[in-house]
Amino acid sequence: MLIIAERINATRKRIGQAFAARDAAFIQAEARRQVEAGADYLDLNAALDPQQERDLMAWAVQTVRETTDVPLAVDTASPEAARAGLTLLPKGSAFLNSISAERERLRTMLPLAVEFETHLVALAMDDSGLPDSCEARWKALETVFAATDEAGIPRKRIFVDPLVRPVATDPEQAGRCLQMIREIAERGGGARTIVGLSNISYGLPQRRHLNRVFLAMAAGAGLSAAILDPTEPGMAATVLAAACLTGDDAFCMKYITAHREGRL
Image (tube, rainbow, N blue to C red; front, side, top):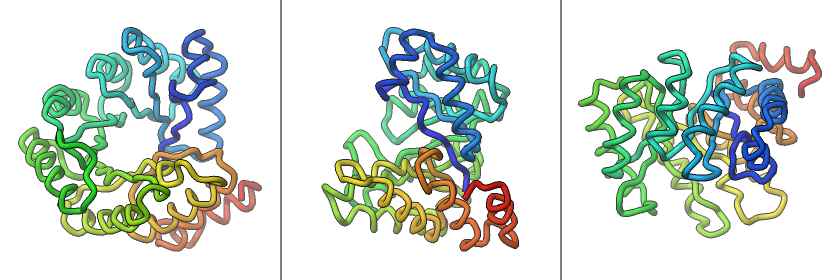
């Protein structure tokens, strides 16, 4: 399972302050901390101010690249900000987060995925909003797949986000999300799956317990990647244990190595 570390997000108070002050040392320390915790990619969200997002995204990419060569996920709804970040990265190395079946987002973001040969997060939603049912999610995905197939993007580069919604407001959403993960593995033509993990626990106390258990359940359903906080207590151990139990860690060697290095 790929781990995309979520903490460098300008909507977080302290990170937003660092973006506003162009505090490179703080952002770089956060990047290193997440890499040390096991991140495969670092997600960068620079949405502090729509008027500055393009410049802030370019600054964030340059700042993080100075301290680590771990690949990046450019996380934005702005095609201008996405281009500013992707231009600074090796072609074929990045995630673009994200597209959906929303007409305008498809029109403006899909060409960037083609031009920069990115991996692509595809949200299972369209212009009607966040879908409740699996059927509505599939309807949106059919639109996305038709567009990505026409653009020549291989399904293996597409990571479908079935849209985790808070279990506190809709107890059935966790089950529906797990169902979608299984169905995408069966019907997605090679497309993979990704979730924004912390959404499941929004509004509840002791969120880390819900996050870790849901991650394990999603791994069992066939989840390919997760956007999460790898520094959350117990999260790295949960990821490693899930890899053992799903067969992704051959002979449990990564788990054993982590134990020997004191990372469990």
